Length: 474
Ligand code: HEC
Ligand code: HEC
Image (cartoon, rainbow, N blue to C red; front, side, top):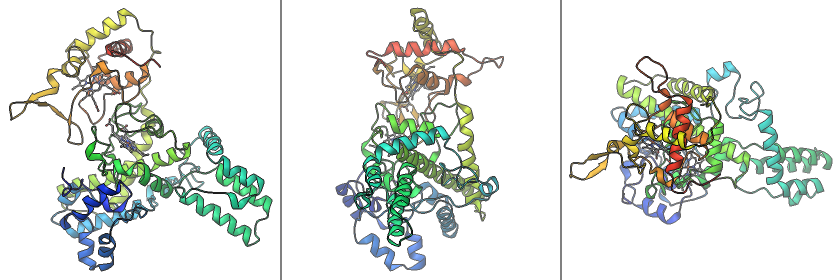
């Protein structure tokens, strides 16, 4: 990709990715790709143009989330409907500097507010974080805010330093200091309130968006389109969250990830890819990033769905964004019922089990794994390749994001979704969403019964592990 061709839907000018990259892409950006063009043309806003023209300001977040190129194409014939969609999305999800969910009727009725997963339903939140998790969050906050809590306890209120990457917390602490200055809090009350503030801290979506700008945006992009400035150099590409498809969960598919799945990805990273571990961040920060990934994913999926509807029907109903949002959100809340639980604990690997696994792996009527992964598991199975127009071998499959994909070389023993036996069990049972890797668990015999037994899946797990030249022992 050349610099005259910025990644789709990305807003390179507006965040803080590597400056050299941004400058070159920014200066060469063709006008017709400008996502704000319709608004500029309509309102003739010189101020807006001047702001984007005057250069890169890393500390300034993008003003709006951009739309995917596919969306623009679907609405090409009707710029009014496009503006309506953009306004609707902004209404329901807010801008990048302050993302938040608007109150959608379905949530009002149920008494939930997804803006605060840490608070109870009816108590201003969505009640997604259990008491046990909240206790863990407090314990972790005590570690991460050790110096602040110590200063508060000593009464050295001026020594309490809140890093800029936690803007919401800064504002809240300053507000407490103001109350003290105004004589409304005595030192003891400020100590108690300050302690609660740091121990009980849970980031708002705006706080998480500030952190996302620093930690994730250069790969995953402003809108979570997987198209940040670093993305073009990476294989596999960073995930485009807007499809609502996530590869590494503990769930039977199709399903949106649970909070636990996202937290695990954030804590461990994805082994063998550029997705790093973020265990250096606090637990509350990781929860907040999971909340933000969900918002970006829902926003993107709603956009994609409405673009598809518009392409079919040529119409965008009033309130369509809110209705669609409630619908997609529902999918995220029901996912937790779909966890794949093995009927038995992982058995100890035996030569017999490995032999059974090998037979299933190579049997076209059973596991059929070798058709893709090859006889020796090297990822060179016949089904994975085709003859291209040029007469050369090319990957036969595209992934859900339209990129060529090859089966894994299982001899390497690198498992992105985790290397515990139960992780491999779930991978084999559920397949890998967005890729051609099929779900063996949903395969049926002609009489409608389950094609593979629990033991057979464990046998495959042990066979796969035996293929690795050096399986890391855990
Ligand atoms: C250096 C690039 C990079 C950075 C920085 C990065 N990611 Fe990723 N991320 C990736 C790649 C690459 C993948 C996809 C790997 C694959 O397809 O196997 C990914 C995948 C993901 C997934 C999808 C997991 C799944 O089950 O499909 C989530 C969620 C995610 N990243 C969140 C984040 C968050 C949140 C941050 C910031 C805290 C972040 N990433 C920072 C590169 C990055
Ligand atoms: C239609 C082709 C296809 C078939 C059939 C197939 N796979 Fe895969 N498999 C893939 C692809 C493609 C990937 C890589 C996905 C990715 O990188 O996102 C993969 C990845 C894997 C992984 C890596 C998981 C991880 O966490 O990184 C394992 C293990 C695996 N396959 C095992 C199997 C087993 C066992 C079978 C048979 C039951 C099987 N596969 C059948 C295409 C296939």
